[in-house]
Length: 483
Image 1: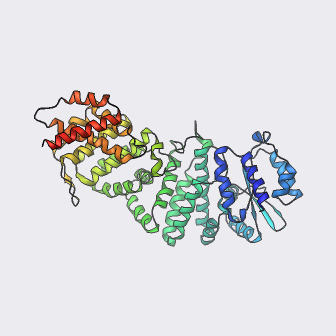
Image 2: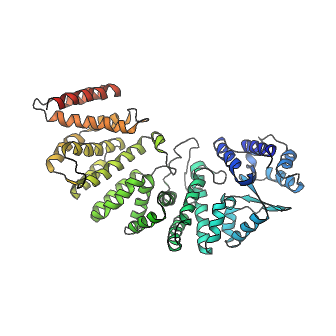
Image 3: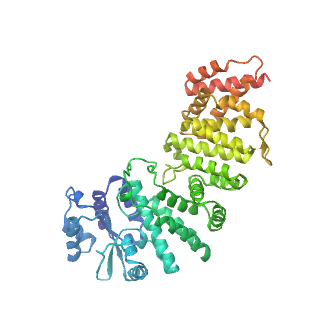
């Protein structure tokens, strides 16, 4: 593709697509092998607003092909959605046709449009998915048997539906969805035949359960939501989470994970996978602790944590962008972290665990996160850390912690200290500031002169964040010095 042709194609894409797609597709076009995407088309409802010369565009893109010019004019007046034409040479076309011949008509239709045609030595495939233009997909597909290939195509089809949930009806998969599937295929390539079948079979089961967007009542999305929107569609969540967990583990680890997950009920398997997709380390640690709990406690715990993550974004944010999650999801992340720490570091009676879950669930999301932070931070203050063994929690320590976490004013103080500090830059500092509040309240309650905690809480709550953090640090310094 000449520079002139490339420039004109990109400009055509710019005119044809919603603004939030353009940068991804422009970059993908310029980095694709041999620049083989010919053009993009939009629906007829938007076509009248475009300004371009049919013959000139067709001349550049399709090498003065009269058939292509007719096709372009026809497409402009059609009611089809966004289109990509992939220009394949004879060898590529043969590989693509060989793969298509192994698929059902329905699966073929999920990958290409019937308007695919040939011009000389070049075949123009009107693609619905990036799969057939992707060497990773082609090479993997050629290694799979027919059943496995069918399953892989179903996975791609479900991922396209996932893209529609995130952005509304739009172009074939680019950006995060494509990257995610490329990683998934890399894991499959490194996996033994038996394990590959196991992973693909499970992914296929979840893919087949994905409900198309058109069948979801009142489904909504927000193109401008940088956290990739929230959806309460369980089928999409389960499918997306499984692919993410596969990607987060190498080919050996994922089989070990599946072995552990399979010991739970079907519903609990979905809950565990969703949690692990949100945070691999915390989810893995939770998975290791669950067998130590009785059925009632593990069920209550998974129900509680899964509920907090039911609206998590379908695309995980990088660590530096976690502040974009929103207050509820930030609180959920805090809850998961503190609960897993409690299970890791402490021996807590299961009656107490169930009581905590029940109590917390009656609170707002912010106060729930404060409730578990007070519990975790309070135990750290009251017990001696043992790196080799979990610490037995005494009833006396829990009574002291109850005096704090059962107080709504204290929960609010701890939550706001953590939430409205400069945690958009340093979440670790925000957690430390809130832990300092817990430490101050515990130590002040133990002083012989019995500091009036009600007044202290009121005074701290009335301060600006920076002022409060400085005041807490100063008071802690005095208390520690007076020991």
